[in-house]
Length: 287
Image (tube, rainbow, N blue to C red; front, side, top):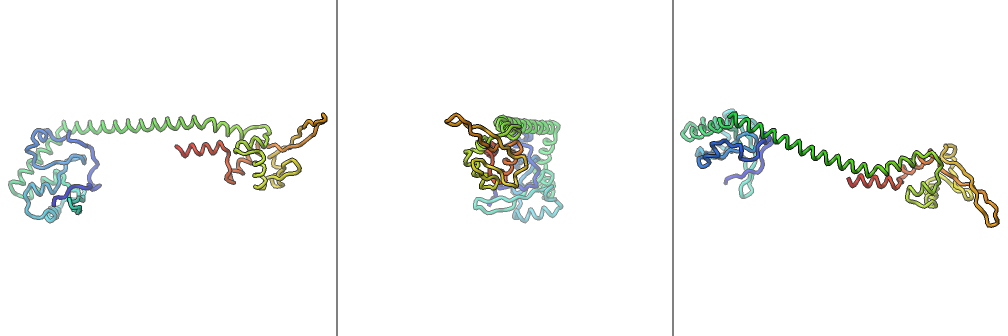
């Protein structure tokens, strides 16, 4: 049963031409006289060995004949290219592509009128293929293909650059904000830091307590001994007006720039990051 092509071996040279536009002129003008189909989609003229076997009216079984032809010194990957095909019944069988030069030699080996006829056909095809006009046409097509590929790549890079610029524009306000809160020289209230983490002041203070950072003394939160003396916090005094007109003096803990950096790194190690950084991470995942 005639095998139909399934996949060509990777040994076949990479393709340069994908249509019939570069067939020799005499073939297009005399298709009715075409002796054998010539495949050009692999970058060089090739013929199917089974087609040549049939055209030469070889009586020997194809597989046996092909093995015998290979004994004449033809090199796989240079003179012929094996691949597997399948019949209509799904059975895999071995096929071969032949270069035109190899096909000419096989025709000579046959030593009969059919062989001479096919050899002459291949000689004319080879002459047309190597004509200056055809060589120039192939060179021009290669150039056009390369230009097209470069244009496509440039377009792809342009679109990628635009996407990245858009992402940077979207991220810039958040990055600037994150940079500013970590470089603020003034003292910062715990409420301000808690807001950055999407938490209330009470919840934030309790979290720091649970993480072993601070504890409560009367109405003021103070750092545990291991974190004291590091310049993380400062105790400030403020006055609270009373109903009788007097002033009640209280103290509260505020965070320095160094302390805020400490909290940022400490909380990040414990799996807690500011809301703004969470948004940046989400944006990166979406990209």
